Image: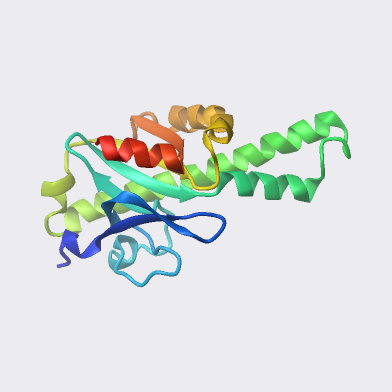
Length: 188
C-alpha cells in the first residue's frame, strides 16, 4: 500500500511564459505536473482517465483542491478563433462568448467531479489518508496563473456558476489570480 507522504512535493504553478512559481506550500500531487517526474495520486490509484485538480492541500479545517489554469489565455484563444466583436454581429458575438464561458465552466466542473472521485478512493486505499484528510470541509481553488487581480474579477460570474453547481459536494469554490492565492495560502 502506498503511503500518503509519497505524493508530497513543493506546489508550483507554471505561468504562460513557462516559468515555475512556488505557491509556498508542500501539497499532495493529484495529477502529473507538466515536465516533472514524480509519483502522483491519480496514476497510483489507476484512475488516469479522470480529469482532476493538480494538488490536494490539507489545512486544520479544510481540504483544498488546487487547480492551476490559464483561463485568460483559454478565453482569448477562443475569441481569436471566432473573430473580434466588430467583425461579427453583436448578438452572435455575445452568444459565442457565452458558449466559451460554458466550455470553461464545464472543464472546471469535470475536473472537480474527477477530483472528488479520486479523493474518495484515496481515503480508502492509501495508508494515512483518512487520518490526515478525513472529515474536513472541502474547498476547490482555481488559480488563474495568467491573470492579475483586475482580470480575475472577470471570472466572478464563472465562480458563482461553478459554486451553485457544486454546492452540495464542495461548500467553497474560489477563483484567484496567482499572487492572491499565494497570499491566502500563507495565512492558512
